[in-house]
Length: 404
Image (cartoon, rainbow, N blue to C red; front, top):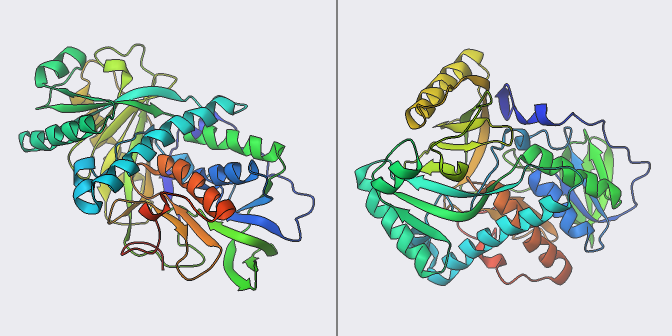
């Protein structure tokens, strides 16, 4: 299916590479990864650098699926606030999950510094504002919960906002040690590393099934059979070739990218901005002084095909951006709609299939997808190599909402 339509900005920042060339595939890989986007590339990096033989199979050019529409906001906060997650899964588990997300942002920075190309990774604070007066209590509860457990944050009254921003809301939660990234550059940089370390990268190969025979899995594909000891599905928002997602909601959203702005005034440290409303509006800046703003989620999985519809949503996003930052001369340069996935329990799907041995999944559904890709790559590395990861149970597939 089409997972994005319209004019995309990230592909203009890096040329589409020629297809990777693999002279001869191995008789059997330690791990075959199905999907060459953020989750697939990070998983391959973790496993190959642990000494395993790895191949990635992708039905497109790698990094051209949902990676091209990823808006690159990296936050330790999640779509579900910490105090809400505590009510859902308990204090210890919820706090540990948030800590894993904070650690993942730092680990993404470590990877970015190693890449042969700059991925425009910049540490930023985030500002989550109360959309209405009724949401102030929610913001305050979250601030107190984060502060109690040692997460870097602050609470802003309306006066604090007016001193630091061009708009004022009833209140805001500020979190620190978040970041922004160009996800397209980031994944392409990882692919460069993978090619150098001998990972086999197969493009335009569509996987249709995987059959287990004793300790080997035969992956059926459009390019013939591949054999592996383990398989990881990092297929993003598209249907997995094996297994069924339970509790996943596939919707679509819209985003625009403005023309460059000369100077950012009244925008505190060019922080990432989002709100308490669900679905929410979000905004960030780019390394070349543009603004990305997204939202207007719709409950349909197919990316919009109508140029008129995309343009209509783009104008609405521009109007909302002008309400926040009336001091800027804002013009739309790029506009698109894209598919995205969420889980009902607000946690990603990471782990081994409950009944299919040696078949694993990393599906980072939610607004924190890139962060989930990072922490998931480490969980899967440890599960595959050591058979254990101390936090794997938090995101395991064998739960009410998972993969069956």
